[in-house]
Length: 327
Image 1 (cartoon, one colour):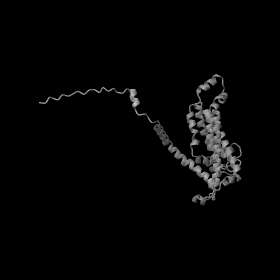
Image 2 (cartoon, one colour; image 1 turned 30 degrees about the horizontal axis):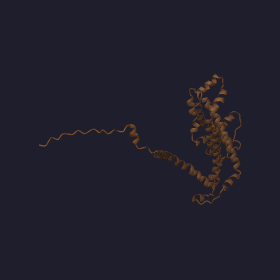
Image 3 (tube, one colour; image 1 turned 45 degrees about the horizontal axis):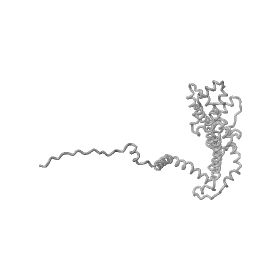
Image 4 (cartoon, one colour; image 1 turned 120 degrees about the vertical axis):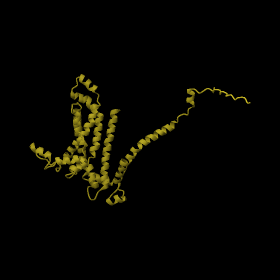
């Protein structure tokens, strides 16, 4: 009989296993170029929607507006796309037009006057609500109503209130024994009328931004000023206003850009009249491009580009001042 087969025990593997440091050295090294490539691809994926949005709604309209201002477009050539090249002729025509000087003057008065009054009123209201009384939040929310209303509603309401015959403003003036004013039909008061409406609409924006800036000022600074015996005016001049400088600069810049291009408010209330008494560059650009049966697309686009240059110059000046202050 064959011998019974016995199981031979297997010998344990006596080969030394690599230690932790040896295993780490034998692991494949990470590819830094691949990691950087993946990071760039991820960043590009997040930036792509923003770039597409800017290209479609900013760069292309700007390119089209520049093209319109450099060609002699008519209604037929605008449809067919075969307008002849005019160069700087449209800009020369705009600068030589007798409407340019009053439109530029009205634009500066309307913009600067609105910004100054809006900022001062917004700052005063922000200081008032920063005291933190019981109904502070409720009243501050009510002040946002003019900012939330559609502009066509606000403009129509102010046009009715300032009406020469049936307006409520003239009714109060007559009740106080003062003469009635032709707010919307007088060349002396039409620009003032649209400024009043624009100031009323812009005050809530200044209030919200400046109140947020006041909330970020540490209370310890005011406590130290009170211990040193500083009064309310000294506290405002030495602490509050300097620490609001950055917020104030942003508020003024945004207000300038917004007010510079205000069109619908003026157009609904006065249509730039009577004459050119309330005509600004924005309303004049619309009148040239769409306000007549024979539109002048090239000069209208040229006026729009001048508005862009003014806003760009103010923005660059703001950046220059900010850099000097932070240097």
